[in-house]
Amino acid sequence: MSLEAKFLAEFRDMNKITVISFSTPTSFPMFNRSPFFVQVVDDQASQVKGVAALIELYKWRNVTLIYEESDSDDLNNYDDIVSYMAAFFEEKNIHISFMSSIAASSEDDQIIEQLDELKTLQTTIFIVHLSHVLASRLFVNEKRLGMISKGYVWIVTFNSMNHLNLRYSSAIESMQGVIGFRSYIPASAELHNFTLRLKRKIDAEMPVAMQALQLKLLGSLAYDVAWSLAEAAEKAVTKVPCTSKLYEISNATDINIYETSMYGSILLQEILRSNFQGLGGEFRFRNRKLFSTAFEIVNVILSGERRIGFCSSTGRITREIYESNGRRRLSFTNNVESIIWPGGSSTIPQGRMLQNRGKVLKVGVPVKDFHSC
Figure 1 (spheres, one colour):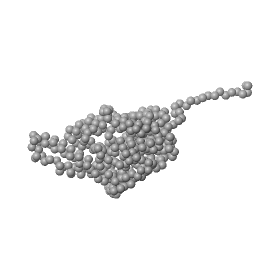
Figure 2 (figure 1 turned 30 degrees about the vertical axis):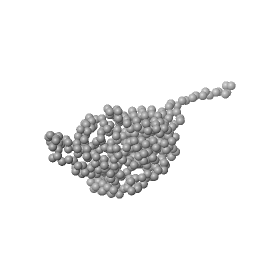
Figure 3 (figure 1 turned 90 degrees about the vertical axis):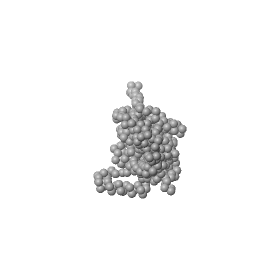
Figure 4 (figure 1 turned 90 degrees about the horizontal axis):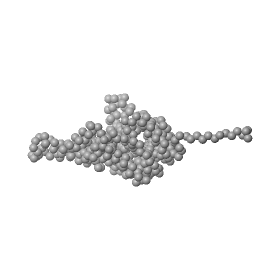
């Protein structure tokens, strides 16, 4: 963790200042233990259940996990999600046959060296749990090594998919056939109207930028967080005790510290009570994490991606989702739409390669001269 992040964590706890994070929980492990740390990303544990459900759907039993190596000094909690994934998969009788960690600082030749090692394994089911920047580099190198081909399966978590704009990503050609989990933003009149207003504004001020305009997940979340914070601030300010009543506090400095701490605690409580329909759908928290009823599962093909199904927060797979009384409901079918796998194949991969991927053994057979007999 950087010195800046450490300072912010200590300053926040001392003054009871709420930190609202769009980062995954492993990005700043020191933050995760604090009651003043609020996540507005989907729950990682729910995603793990969804990935396991997809693996079970196709009856694969052995997988390889590729995850991002921490640059944090706090080694006790960075790998929490990796440990959870290993334990949950074991419960489901899914064996992680190999774990490979890649650092964000890795050079391409180091990534290629690790991929060469993975090619020697018989398991061809890979789970990629990396940042979008590192994942893009990984897939470009996989393509070079022939690992985006028939027989392989690549499952990418929302750590990457939530931030990748595949339509404009240079990695799109290297990700054909990849399956990705992504936070789900349901279509709504509010989202449609907001997008239209945003397009008009950008078209008037920056016409060139219109070509690449797409309201991504973080954009809608940022809008909903700002709305939640504004509502919480209005409610909190009416609940902070008047300073004139704080006669037991000795000086103005102590009063200011008390007010800041009190206001911070009340503001946090009001934020966590948020419950409304935002641009990204239902906006409410559970255990200081943004509550989500579903993820969408996409298949990367051609110049973008195609939705093939959904996964509930409890790890159930379905093709369809519908709205009921303003809330999302899943209609469970225990399957997904047809998938185009790496190599353009529609045949479900078996999950293992039987052929030897090592050096080719050449056997020479002497030719007998029959004329000499």
